[in-house]
Every structure is written in structure tokens, then in C-alpha cells.
Length: 470
Image (cartoon, rainbow, N blue to C red; front, side, top):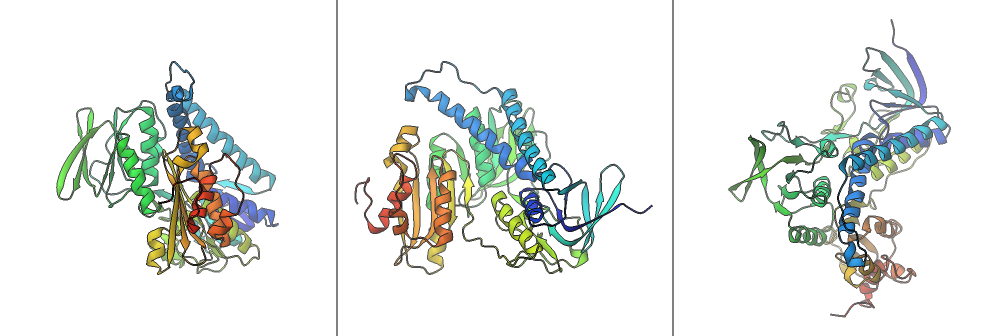
């Protein structure tokens, strides 16, 4: 018996941030849309990534502040995490947001099909529903958004009980006394700060010479590394993990730094070494789709080499960020419905929910100098910002990378309170080609955190007001 057939103007493979946004936008533009997702809509980000980790981040930040209540003249006699309640809050938040996306898809008449899809022709997917059923979806135009999977380096012992990926680290039943995080990138450091706040003793092993390599300006990364170490977190760079062994009830992680081997004991090991495009087993190459290794190759309009097929998000490599995938989804949906829009990755912000937070957009100082630009770097510390003082979070700074003559803002890099929100102003500056003078003559409300951006911009003319001149 032949498989049931479904036809659409646009078929989207993958219901993550890129895929469901592409489906919604294509439907807004009048297309008949089918969205195929093997699990729940929202993908990694909404179900086991951005959203649940930020629930834990927000809860543990509240815990840390509550323990410091006496600094603000507030007495809270007992402060402790209620792990079952915290897990319930996390699940409820995710369920509400997933439900919201499902309602949006329904209201815009997007047909949602659940199952595992394979591309059998450039215009047709075969879908296995996991129950022995199969169906086919054909469309005039296809958008590929299969997302990414956890990168799994070949570390002996990585399959031992007590060794988890970021997905496993989200379900906290007990707080380990000691924890080793393999990977000092965004995912690893965010989880390190979560578990540190809950009471774990953390060791972070990063194989490259610096934490957050490529994710933010070097000066910011160095400053964060120092702050984490001062808090008692053992953060080692240049540490290559050799193997993991179980010794009774303890996990022992062996790593090598500058030729010397070190063994670190713990109860939980988190492997947080990045993600890979989720393209294996989908027959893309067999159908002639051009690939860049694991990633799908696309042009500036996110079109693949196959006619009427676009690809977006983590599957095309580059920044694996939900907000980048969402913009990709909008671009691909427009182009699949008659548009001619190109992507612009100059102003994709990177936000890192460590404690303190880190956020960056545009060029780092090293990148700007490598490009041969004559630049001026100006910065302002949050220790001189009244609102940061009021919040009791005065560590960190705002750094602007500006073109030397014009003052055009090439990059903005921040560490401090709520900088994951403040970076929006920096992204707008980079996107629009604004100058330091434009920022300096924009009135910022007082007392607020964005005044640090104002003062950093004034520094381009050596005119910062609320800091002593050197």
C-alpha cells in the first residue's frame, strides 16, 4: 500500500527556532505550509537548551542574591534550593512555551506532522512516525532546519554512569559535592555557574589556551576567568582530557597540561564540548546536496545548490545560536515565497549567562586589528555605574571597539549585570553603522545600567565623565 501523500507550497524540516519561525513567516506570507518535527516543537533550544538552562540560571541567581540579602539590609533566615520544585518550575515553563508555539502554528494553519524524515527527492520527504507508519510530503519549496546534536568527543569512559551531556545536566535530583566540566565554552561555563550556585565544587577543563575562545573579546574572557578562580572555581586551560575512570563511587578524570597528567575526582562529569550539525542519515549528499563537512552549504540567500531548497540554523554551521536561526528562518521563508533577502551576520550577538553575564557583538579587538583597521578601544567599568552599585553587581565593564577616525562602532563587548539585555543597543549600533558620538549624544536614563555604554562612548573622545582620567 502506498504511503499517504501530503502536498504544500512550503515544507519545513525541523521545528526548532529556525524551522518553526520559517513556517510561521511563510504562512504569514500566504503559503500552505507543512512543518515536520520528530519530537516537540521548539527543538533543542526550547526543550533541552536555551530555555531550561536559563530557568536554572535565573533560579540560582535568585538563590545567590537571597544568600546576600544581609548586604541589602534584608533578613532571610534560611535560604536553600528546593530541587523538586525547581525541576517542576523548569518543566512548567518549557511546557507553556511549547504550547504557545503549537498554538501559533495552529492559528496560522500550519500543518504539523510528527516523525523522522528522510529526503527521498529534492521535493519530497519520507516520514516514519515511529509506530510503523510512513507518509510522504511533497512541496514546491523546501526549507531544511534539522538543527544540531551534542558533539561527542572520543574520550574513553565517556559512557560511564555519572557522565552526562547538557541534556542530562538539566535534570537535577541531587547536587554533586564535586563536578568536572569538560569544555570551557558557553555551555560548559553556564552549567558550571549553575552547579556552583547550588553548592558544587567545580573544576572546568578546557583544551584551548583560553575560555570562551571566539565567543567574546579576549580581555573580557580573561577577566571572567580571573573572577571565577577568585570564587574558588578551578578553571584550567590547555587541559586535554585523556580518559575517565570509575573508582568505587567516584569518577576520576585524567587530563594533561603541558605534558603533566592530573587526576581529578568527582561525582558528576559534564561533557560540554559543543554541537555538530544534525545532518547524518538524511541522504542529503546522495541527492546531490552540497555539503561543507557536516554542514549544509548555502549562499547569501540561504539557498542550497538544489533548486527551491533552502537551509538554515545550526545545520549550516557558523554561530549555533537560536536567535541567529530565527533570523535565518525569516530570511529563508521570505525567499521561498518570492523574496530576495540576504543574511547579514555582522551583528549577531553572543550572550552567555554566566555569573556575571557576558555579551558580545561585532568584531573583537584582535579581529579588528587583524583586519588592518586603525582602531580605538574604550571601556568603562560597572564599578562606576550607580545602578550596578545599587544592585550589588559592580564587577565587569563595557568595551567598545571603534574605527579610529570616524568612531564607527565595530564591536561591543560586555561583562556585568544584565548585559545579555544591554547588548541590544550594541547590536543596533553595529547594524546601523552608528558612531561612538551617536551613542554619546543619545540621552540615557539615570540611574540605569545602559549609562555604562554612554560613558564608554564618551571615552572615544577621552571625555568620560564619571571616571578619573588617566
